[in-house]
Length: 230
Image (cartoon, rainbow, N blue to C red):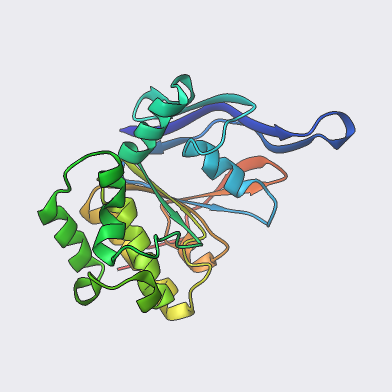
């Protein structure tokens, strides 16, 4: 089942001689439950593409469909609600609210949507992320790896159709990077999520079902790297 598709998606910055095609017209399709890695050199258009896939940035042209919905056909307020309900974001910067506890940070998207958290599910996620002994801690009381686990929990909280992760291990050491990769892959398997990850880490890319490479705004598909993380 197709969960995400683009049609002629493109992004151009500037005009005339200063014009830059950050993303040339691109058609991709992602199936439900897939783990897709997006790689490429710095400045190649990876983050631009991810932000448009998630409705955080508007394209110059083309369309993005998530779960059959043309996301840019919606008004800004509708799109904001759609993002909260359908898309989970994980960024390199953890973006946690410093005055909220681990559990409060994880359930924040639901509270913003005026939805009652599924307490059983939230506890299951906290347990799966190894945060049971940290649920009342503030972000300042956590290590970098633990903060990224909270960010993953927040992305999972609303049971989104798709998770978009931009360099999720960029600020972590090797061991924490491996653990975060394993947790993200667990979410795909356990909660039937679809995961799209931007990464410079070849080990993460090697565990994806598919690898897309962006260079000079052009997207090409590479052979998948190999077996999944356990």
